[in-house]
Image 1 (spheres, helix red, strand yellow):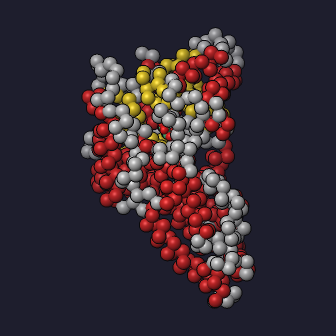
Image 2 (image 1 turned 60 degrees about the vertical axis):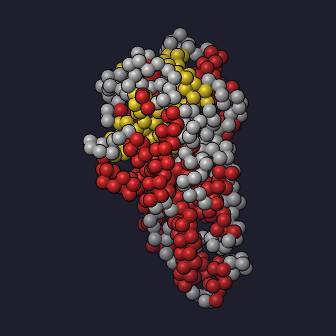
Length: 525
Ligand code: BGC
């Protein structure tokens, strides 16, 4: 999971700086107002021969800079309309998507492998009462960073936490699985060494909740095997193995005496963490690096569950909705979505997540930009764009966030990103408007799909009516991406009408820490 807490300082800075810079740029933009026509005019002589924009601008003469911009904007209007057709999801399509999610949810609860949505039983059969108390360790693997946390549950719905974040480099994500788990154990040792200097850390028996935010076929509350890696992880010798056993072995190798009492998905943690203080929370959603949802299901509906049922009324289900529509029947895909999938670590898998989550949105935008450069519709004064623009995943989702927040007259923040971060030699205002429009389309589609997922789950648990339900949500898109929450709310209204008023979308921060501690606590009872 990626949340504000789990962002690297650079990411956090990028998001926050975007806001501050927007203000600063607005202040200086008036002095820059006149620099753009000059740039357009002087660029004309360097424009590639093939550019239709260059030809039309040249016809009007070099002095007609303002006209050139207008012409470019007209040309862009066609481009924008074409792209909108590729990315838009009208209300009736969203409703079809909701219906299909409901069909898949039912099938997934009946039998493993029966639907694209895995509907994994979590073995969490109780929500917190608010009275849970104690000190727990929690690990959070699956977002941008790896985190080690120590959480003190106060027994009154509150908690305190301290944490250390560690950057997981590509080598750890994609190398040998044993090395990944050794890295985790080393981080835990470093954390304990820092926060428990005066204690003999090897002598204490710690209790730990392991938030492992990947699809796991969970056998018990603290065991289960990885079904498939997502979010760019590919470490070897982990798929098919019990990840808790791998963790325990690594702890043993490092002489750490830690009892892993719960294996947790970040969505489950997110739900539990908010439910600790808000008992009407029945759904937990992550909209961050990856995307997924967990919710509370009646045990009689979890037909495939083979564990003990006595005294059990409900169970949290980890939907793994990232895999929805992998057979591509209901969500329209365009050539950029298909290319992104083809070039991903696991083609054909988790394609819903690819349309929603922070790991992929920037890359979709980049693929569109590269294509428009080829057709001469974008950056025609910087033929070919730049090597950075042609580099996979170089257009970060955080850039989209900054661009969508750029309301300066000349789109100066967008200019900075394109010209300084992506090294495109020269951009026109029309270019920047087009890039902004593309970011909006991709960001909007993500929020609307997320809303469709929420609408389906709330419908499934019969909570559309009063008094309603709280949906706990974590992840950088929901917390930080401009307009994301309102776009979700608008889409919910389009899908379920006035009942949307009964769905409260609420931030639930740090499910991977507090939620994991709660589950570890409940598991120990
Ligand atoms: C994983 C889920 C996780 C989600 C959000 C997905 O890639 O498969 O288990 O909940 O990301 O972190």
